Image (cartoon, rainbow, N blue to C red; front, top):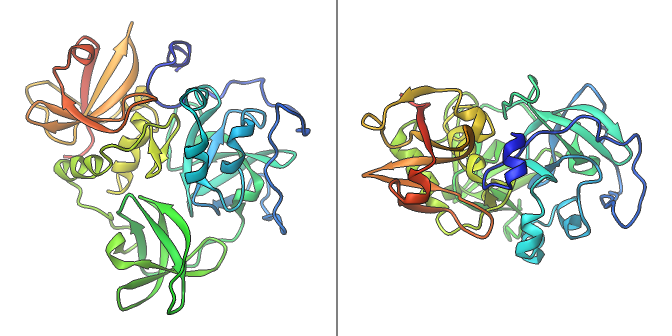
Length: 343
């Protein structure tokens, strides 16, 4: 984990370093405070909370976000505008500042508070860093303490992104949400599925953009070939350090969210993914297996085997999700083994 940070390599997040959490947060040129909402979510330390924006980014400390990141700290979060305004240098600067992301409706556990920020762990993103889930700091305004409504059906977004729309005949777009977002289904009408947001609003979404299943069922087929199909759906999408949404991925953000859509929870980061699953020889690998790459014994990258000697990957800042040959020399030299998570 530390090696990946030191080398500024291509893959996702690294350690939340101890001793870097300030006791309070003050407004200054180097500290970006999230915009206050009219009513702050009533989240409490030691309790569950739920993401109330399309995508929330988990930051290393409350001081990690920069002025350019302000658009990602608000409620609603302006993810498209944030990404469009970052230069390549800004994107590279996320390394060491941001660690992962969580989606609208995802459950988190609040473990600490500092001013207008809270530290959370994300239970569905396993990591050796914390037994309870992936840790990081988020603006309090991006969370809610409202428990999701109980529902027989859950709608999971299976398009890159889609819009939540007003629940009326106009169906005006309100919020763009990511692949993998899961919301309770509360009804259907014509070409629409009606869902409940974490703040209790009913919205519409195109039925063609979601898979409606029971809460315990996988949204997408649990097969290696379909893992590949989903990954390739993001071809051309710009790499984003710490990204784990249809707006941008890092290497292990792509693999972990792709698998989550199948009800398969794997570790968030590449080095941890390389220590789970079942080892597979090069001759026995199948589509959907994960391929790992290391420098001096430290895993720093993961891709998805696509079959026929090809792989899908989100390689590095400045590049995009792509399908390339496994034998590409720069990767072949660092190949460190394959693991299987789907039988």
